[in-house]
Length: 250
Image (tube, rainbow, N blue to C red):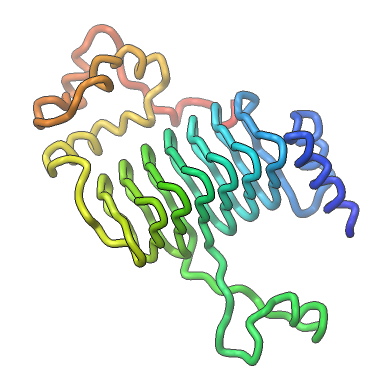
């Protein structure tokens, strides 16, 4: 077992305290952690590669983040989620327990498919394959034990049913389920979906969101239930502010 492995496992048991994260990023060749001070990492998680956690992110016990992984503001990863490879998840997502995001895959056209066999027995190399990074939008709910595979893009506001295996892209605000996952419905009608996508509320600062509390507590049944961006700008209580003006890991 290498020293880097020992250090990373020790930090896992401690929940990656801030001082230890800084030392790991500074002295490890394989792991760089960019973690907001307000992000929460439970004990028993394992972080490897280049991992970025935005403000108020919550990573629950037993999660594995291994690769080039970025998790957006106030997104929750419930216990024992695995994010492997090139995975980006947006803001305000709810990722249920034991969900897997698997970007790299195995090559299947050689005599063996096991990377370790090529490395340790043959002293050779078998590179993983990939259909591309996994990208998850904002305000996405992924149900328990769902699996998201290589190259998939999930649109804003989508719902992934429990146990689904997602092999193709998912449209914004679609509801998908099954193996392989197929669309079984929509969260809202098309006019409502279009207005919500125009608002992009998940990029607003939290003061603006709190000032719009009445909107978020409203059941959306008619397009008129969703104000336009111009109407929000005309509201004297606040002006929507994009999070792009914020420090990503402050």
